[in-house]
Length: 190
Image (cartoon, rainbow, N blue to C red; front, side, top):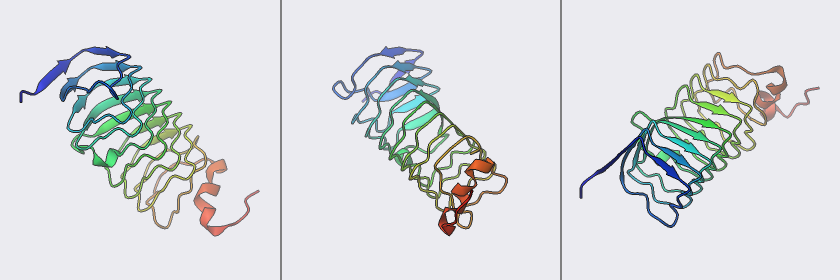
């Protein structure tokens, strides 16, 4: 079957949970108000694409490529980014809900998350060196053997990061966020 290529195209309000997205390469395309919930996006390549106000809840992303992709105001609940094609994997998230998603064992250095809800997200063994988390909520997020060197958590809340099992050298935290580094000691900080 011939591979399809889509360059510089705009897709508006399409319900891909009903209408299947054509398998192929999407370069510099924009998707606005599209529904990808429960859609099969396996083996589709998105390069320098932008998604605005889209719902990706529980979409299948096996071997999906996200290279230089921007997600704004998107719902990405339960997404398994750990199943994506890891080659040149890079994205930017702004005003997104990523609850219950997984970044397990990914190398996503310098990723920016701005005003995102990251509740119960799995960052186990993820390399987040130099990443920025601006105004993010990490309630129940899992950090285990995670590389957080030079990451910025200064404006984020509700994280619980054990410095003994995560690499946090030169990571940045506010004084208000220090309790998130001491949770395991069950001490009162006043």
